[in-house]
Structure formats: C-alpha cells, structure tokens
Length: 163
Length: 246
Image 1 (cartoon, each protein chain N blue to C red):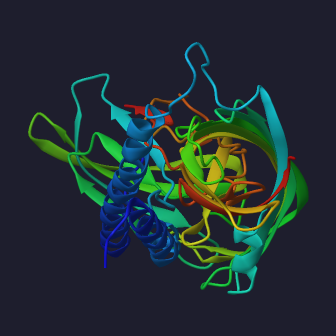
Image 2: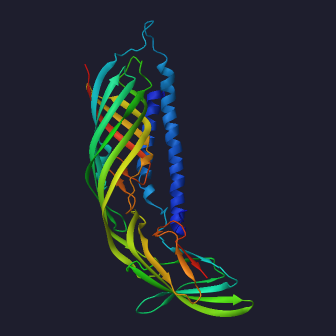
Image 3: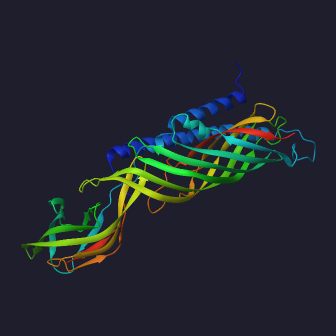
C-alpha cells in the first residue's frame, strides 16, 4: 500500500487521540503541595545563655502529649489546634550557663482564626491560620515578636522568641 | 518554598511528570510533522502573476460545536463545557475566532471529595492560521491557533477532611463561595476536514498556560468553565463545523 501524507495525518490524529485519552487522568495523581502548616518560630538569644534542648507539649483539657523535642534548637515548628481558636503550648527548656544546667518552663499562648484551604481533589485541604495574638510567660523568655500573622503551607517565620 | 509531603505522592507525581513530558514532546512532534509539509506545499500554488491569494478576503463564515467535553460525560466525567465557536475565513489564511459557552462541574473524587461549580459562562477569542491557504483544494487544511479565554465561576467543595498528625482529625469540612476569575492562553494546532457540502470536522490540540488561575483565599479552582480540570495544561477539542459558504 502506498503511504501518502493523508495517511500520515490520520495516523497522527489517531495517536494524539489515544495519548490524550490514555493520559487524561494522570494529572489528578500526586500531591504537589503540602497540607502541613506550622507556626514557624525562631529562638533568639539576647544574653550569654544557650538552650541545649526543648520539649514542647500541646495543652488540652484532657491530656498533654509531646509535640516535639529538639536539641540546641534555633527554629521550632508548632502545630496549632484546628478545632479551636487558641492553643497553649508548654515549653520546657534545658539551659546551659557557664557549664551549669538549668531547667525552665514557659507557656506559649496563641489565639487565631482558621481558614480551610482547598488544594486539590487528590490532596484535599489544608488548614491555614491567621494569628490574632501571641503571648509567652517570662520564666526564660523575655519577649515574643509577631513577624508574620499568616500561617500557610509556606515556610515563613511567624514569631520570634527572645531569651 | 513549598514542601513536598509524602514519598509515595512524590513518586506518583514524578511518574506523571515523566509521562506528561513524553506527551508534550510527542504532541510537538505531531504538530511539526503536520505543519512542515503544509508549509512547503503552501508555496506550490500556481497563481496568476500579481495575485497573492487564491481566495477572496471574505471567504465565508463557519459555526462549530466542540463535541469532545460533552462526549466525556458519557464516560462518567462529572464536568463539561458546552462551547460554540464562530470563525471568519479571510483569504482562507487568517481565521478570527470567537467562542462562548457554559461549563459546570459536579465531580466526586475517589476519596469522596465533592467539587461543584454552578453553570457559568466563558468566552474565548483568537486567531487561527491556515498553512495551506493557497492550495487548489481548500476544503481540507491544517494550521496553528492562538486564543485567549476568560471565565468567572463560583464553586464549593465539600466532604474535606484535615489531619495534622497531632491534633484530632477535622471533618467533614465544606468551603463555600469560591469565586474565581480565570484567564488563560490556548496555543496549538488544528486539522479541518470537509465531510459533506457544508459539514466539516476538526480536531485541535493545545497547550493552555494560565495567565491568571483565579486562586482565592480559600484555595485553587479545580474546574474552570471552558478550560476543564486545572490539573492538566493540555486540551483537546473535536469540532463539528457548519460552513456558511457558497
């Protein structure tokens, strides 16, 4: 059979159709964007003390559970309660002062409102937060600075804890 | 910087990226293979000296209907865009186009997330170019096109669940009133074949980058009328044309 340009055209159209159908659902798979949102916190020393470890618990009326534990932290990622407009986080720090070790306990209190954020059909939604207020007790920490009140799935520093 | 979530989803995503890369490459090859002989043959016309075009400036008008998205609903797709297009034929070379239609979505994913878009209008305008404009047989031809599309839509998503791995899972969550204004380009190739006196069929494939996706403070749109699901940048159309021409 003599193959003409017309035959090639028809073959190419057919191939395009097959590829379109075969791959039409592929774009739905895979989750390109993370659902996780954190309160990104930087710990900034202002004196001669240095924190050697931090444990954090999310406080509830029922029970507390360990949220994170880190050695020599400079940055912390806290998870806010999505079913509430406030979260209390108990922080336990081990501090080194000229070779002597001390333990301090502080509580971080964050108030906010939530904003469910639809990502896609496969991944579902994330939970974004807008911080209304943030305070910290002053056993170790001197101050808390709110840098960015929007908590999204992008890594941007939200608060700075100074000690 | 946005972070990847789980390893399995990353692998699936990467697999699809590879497939789409191959798909894009093959589509480009198809278009080039289609266009190159046409470009060469376009120079072969034996027109009288001094005559640039075989066909008059106004060479007719055609109206068409894109049957591809409605046909997909027969295969269980919960969304469709009904699109009609008017095309003017200028010298059988340039084809200004205007299309309008209505799109809707009522789609439920495998994990039972439901996305609903009320029927909403969309508009497209652009130009197609025929590489075979001086062929003696002007009924069958192919070329390239560029269009810009716009749609306004209002959507809601329901049956969403959220878990952060620490606090209690939340759900079902609904997000209402997602209002999106979306704008996109369609850049592609087409084929048009005459099948009866006033009836033609046409296929087109296009790459459709968003100029403005229409993301809202509540999330990204999954479906845009006239565009379809936003999970792919490639589009395909099957037009049934009625040619208004002597």
